Image 1 (spheres, one colour):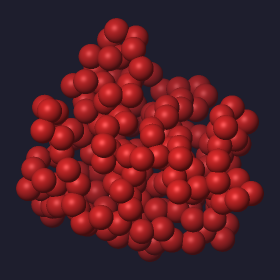
Image 2 (cartoon, rainbow, N blue to C red):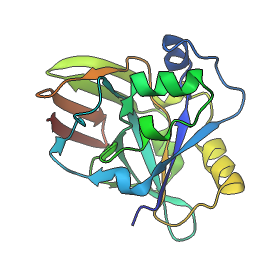
Image 3 (cartoon, one colour):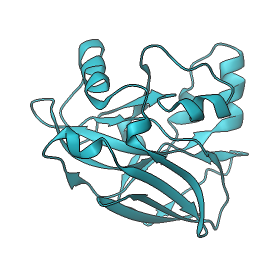
Image 4 (spheres, rainbow, N blue to C red):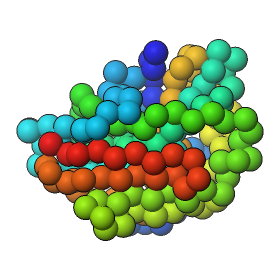
Amino acid sequence: MIRNIWAVGRNYAEHAKELGNEVPTEPMIFLKAGSTATLAAKELVVPAWMKEVHHEVELALQFDENLQIDEACIALDLTDRDKQNQLKSKGHPWTLAKSFKGATPLSAFFPVDDLEELKNLEIILKINGETRQMGNTNQMIFSLENLIEFVRQHFPVEPGDLLLTGTPAGVGPIRRGDALEAEIVGKMKHQWLAR
């Protein structure tokens, strides 16, 4: 069971810049409810009350019973961008923009024997066949080891929790009817239909 999703904001410099944000000097963590995760579904639902939902493709790590990483997957950190901008401007939490029902679609999991195998992977998101996001895990500002240690030190991490490691540049809106294909090259590929 996924209780908590510990998500890292602005872990790729170009993504921070595209949204007009400063590049952080320590990991910036926000919490998503574990109940927002949908595992290996074929559809993702864009809530009717949202004006603009943005895609953010990420490598997600899962903690085992010893709070080590033994599995990973592709995650979409769906974001109500209009609501997030409103909340940020008022200094309010982002929960409504990040933790709505279905806000974290996941691929199936794949095993991780060593974090080294995750440090030079291409992450790609295509929508209707067009590449929208492309990055490499070697572009992360904070290393996987640093992120893992930071969340274990500061938060009540539980077995089964996820760590979303940040998104590369190129985030943008999803429309109902869009076909999304996310890939971590050499590890996993998954497709969703937005409705």
